[in-house]
Amino acid sequence: MYRETGLVNSPPPSGQDDAALLALVQRGDEYAMAALFDRYSKIVYSVALRVLRDPAAAEDVLQEVFMQIWRNPDGFVATRGSLGGWLAVVSRNRSIDALRRKRPTESVDDIALASNYNLADEAERNSLMEKAREVITLLPVEQRKTLEMAFFDGLTHSEIAEMTGDPLGTVKTRIRSALTSLRKAFPA
Amino acid sequence: MSEPRRITSEDLALFAMQLLPPEEMAEVAAYVEQSEDARRELAEIQGDLAAYAHTVDMQSPSAQARERLMKQVAREKKAIPIDRPVEAADSSVGSEGVAATEGFGRGAGSIYSSEEELPKRGFAGKVVPWVGWAVAAGLSLVAGDLYKQRETLRSAVTEQASRIDQLTADEAAARQVLDAMTDSTAQRVTLNVKGAPPAVPQGRATYVASKGTLIFTATNLAPLQPSKTYELWLIPAAGQNPIAAGTFRPDARGNASVILPPLPKGVEAKAFGVTVEDEGGATTPTLPIILVGAAG
Image (tube, rainbow over all chains, first blue to last red; front, side, top):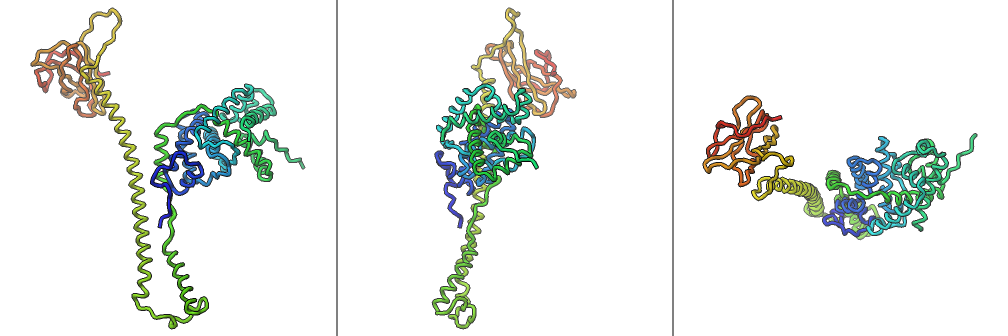
């Protein structure tokens, strides 16, 4: 007898939470996979596009990241935090790997992530985006630029120091301070 | 012996972004594994980075990206776990056996010690209980096969539906282009340098030899007697006879077009020409040639 496969034959409600969709994906539910894609493809693609600046390469990363969910939905467990946040970070890491033309780091997706946002909810997602953008625009230019170079361009602190002429310690402090400012904007 | 380096939250931030050299990555990874506080801080940093990632300008991936993913998902369809009725049957038989034994007041295991002491069962009695399980196993296999077929069909239907949508959209766009080019009510305007002398008859042919696709438009053509028609000719580069490429009559403003006339594929053109022929067209061009243009 086949196990009950829940919503295998009908699209899951759009409001279904990530954990429920992942459970369906684990049982081979393609509709659940499509629902996750519809929910998070934009952020995954946008991050990849920002890093790689190439739509075709960004779509490759998008495909790779979502196929990883399909192949191994256990790779993300709810205790690790928000799936949307995890996907955004994984997309960035995969894109940096692609930029460096190296094989994906084995532990790249083993990310525990603290987040107070329910990114499955579009309104909360939009709210996070707005707030994060606001914080970033209020950062001192050097901090903003340094974080951008590290996160989106994948430059090491040594490379950033070399490019900007700033001491290594200053570069590290700027990155840390920028992230601290972000954290303060999203209190636990 | 050197003191181990102190791992700071700055190091953890760089570690989270994988920006440390390999040896430092390993060092920090080992530290994180040991320290609960470091793991907590690292999770916070990952949360900060996730929030930062959301500051990016949002762009939607193409519709093809979704299609590509769902195709790949369908290709890597998961085997949904199924229960195994044969094993279930075995275990059921076992427990029934024990129950039967207990019913006869024997200790566990004695069922196998003396078969003679059991109630005698005929051939039918031995076979019939298995028939149910055999039927169940058979049905399970058939159901499995049907499920597989259904999933294959569903995947094929989804793919075909998507293809049909694409073709329909392409067809609609192509139809719109053709309609615009052949619509007698369409406004056709030839742009010239301001103050240029009155326009002369002119034709423009666009031809793809490999596909035999030809689009011809003409402007400022003189009107013809009712018994006459203009005819377009393709003059092959290889020296064969001119190939008739369609007859046409201009509208009241002298505009005309020949869109996708039936032509053989792969005939390279040396030139195109237009002649005036009797209504119905001719098989060879009649001089004079009204319009002529060499293919570039």
